[in-house]
Amino acid sequence: MSAFADALAAVQREIPAHKRCRVGLLLEQLDSTDKALAAELREVLASDIPHTTLKRALDKIGQDVGIDSIRRHRSPECNCPR
Ligand SMILES: [Zn+2]
Image (cartoon, rainbow, N blue to C red; front, side):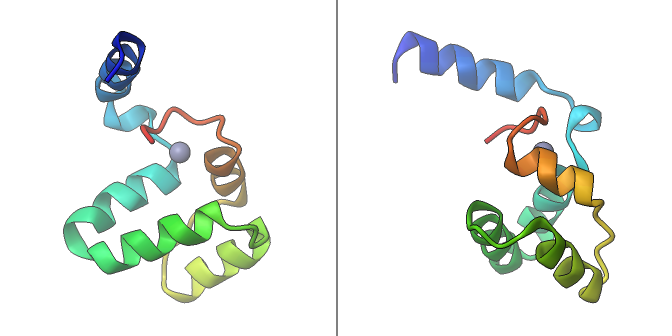
């Protein structure tokens, strides 16, 4: 890893949980409760499925994630580590 990649990883580790968006927190939670769904969700987030379609699908599985969180997380303008 380059010095810059190390620095970037260090900054991402320093981001406190409360600075993460709803999508990031959900992914983090799923990483410990449902790894398969976490992987599936990451794949869909990286795809070109519209934000609204993704939001409605999350609603159906009982995950209330705002459309703005989804948009920010995908853009990516949020602080989540990636
Ligand atoms: Zn995020």
